[in-house]
Image (cartoon, rainbow, N blue to C red; front, top):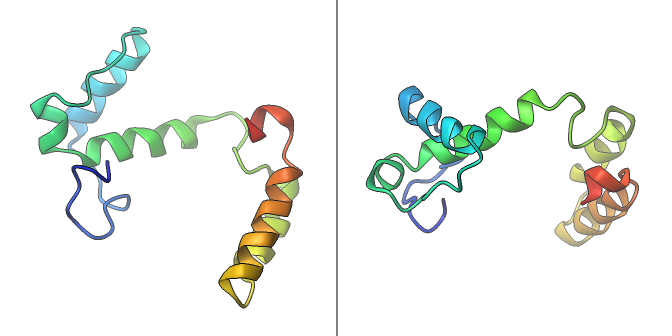
Length: 100
């Protein structure tokens, strides 16, 4: 995404719905999608959109409900260094499947 995206906020922009569905179909059919196809390069936002869709559809959030407050506190730390240390500490508390 970052290699082909030239716009600030690339992860916030949505891809074209039909391209997202094509890419999703490739993943769902157990193929390894070729993300260098022109259709995906020209609409690189569809790749980010599919990632966000995947995370929204997880039965349990990747950053668990139990650790939500700790993550929230960690990202609110005053300095970048303190924020990094606190986020690292909370990530260490994730259940093994979420951590992986």
